[in-house]
Amino acid sequence: MDSHHSSTAPWVAVDVGFGLYAMRKCPPRTPSLVNTPNPSTTQSLLPLPPDVSPLETMSLPPRTTSSLIAPGLYVAPLSARQQAARALPSHPTKIPSGANSYHPSPLRPVVPADQCLLMWTTPHSSSAQASLDSQLPVENQSQILLRFLDSLSPSTRQSYGAGLLRFTQFCDRLHISETLRMPASDALLSAFVADAAGSCSGESVRNWLHGLRAWHVLNRAEWHGRDLLVRSLQRSANKLGSPFKRPLRNPISGEHLLCLHHHLDVHSPCGAATWAAALAAFWGCRRLGELLPPSAAFDPSKHISRFSNFKSSIVNNTKVLTFHLPSTKTSPTTGDQCILTATNNIFCPVTALQNHLRINHISTPTHLFAFITDSSSYQTLTKSQFLHITTEIFVSHHLDPVYGHSYRIGGTVELLASGVPPEIIMKLSGWSSLCFLLYWRRLDYLVPIAITRAWTARRNEFAQKFNLPTS
Image (cartoon, rainbow, N blue to C red; front, side, top):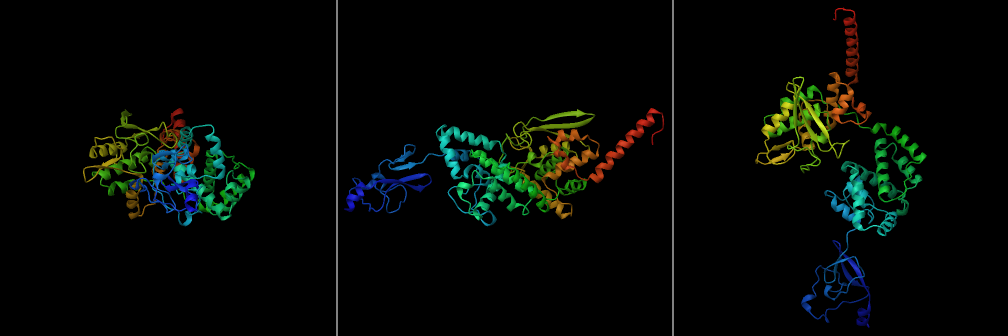
């Protein structure tokens, strides 16, 4: 009876890990190797549970899209999302814990934050996927997903992933069913915003909603975030979240630069690279992330190379050095120019850059601010390493704390105080909107300078017109 039942019982595919499937008979059954023609072939490729038949005795599984890699062993094809994820830069993945934990679910695999948009799904995602499968091959679907993700910077994708996490935690806490999480109704979004208001800044809430919207767009779901009630609650979140706003970044001042110059060994490889990067960010009014990479990995399509096109010129008897930045925040694909004008003093960016290139003479294509190490190889100066070196110096001398944007802000303040027109500074630093005004600091210093300069110019104009002496 048992043998007869075992011979006629149907087989089912069993996931044994790593995308591999073996065939298992429906219970109850007792596998036997007695009638196996060739005992030497009965050893399975992977250790299997006791109710799994030897791989040599398995018939083809009821899948037409699987790939047979060994008798009875099949690899499931990658989905469009999996293919797109493989094309993204890899990051170490940590198991969520503490404030970042959420209820585990097959719909939300553990992935890096910048892949949550892609890999976290809902029941709605499955129905939308079925519609796509009936229209497009998997390869074309993967292309669509990748191009959508390319429209967002890596930091934006990571920020949006945080929004999905907070929304998931909120829904888990209220036991919201998976089917109601997408499309998220205006009532659910309103409750989410109201719950977050007063516990974080309004900017954080706004970024979370941007992430949820991108998630809905990617999964072809209707978005209700423009509802009037949702928008009203966002304004409330802005008001209640003001205590959580980060304080304004302090600008790098002349005192900071002088301290750096005194305590950096500008004749050492690392010191020369650090000093050159600091002055390039300051006088070029550039974001530090546009000059220094986040990691040692060098990508010439995104990072400035020492083999880039450098142009040197003389303007009003002053040397000017210009080079191309492959990717900037406002021009991620076409990039922008970094223009450094000599100051003819110890803070000269042109002299500092030439000194760096002379000391760190590297003949292979690498990052502009790479420096030679003790082992006669070279190392890329990263943004985090730069900030670690400079912050230690500033803290030890009790100077105001500064951050990456502080160099850009400090350069802007210095040029404004020198009388450079604001529109020239906007063009120099790559600002594309009037948000440039948000980075003005020390208005108690800049405004009187601009007013007295205008008064002086008017008095001199009046004196010249009537041949009066100027003071």
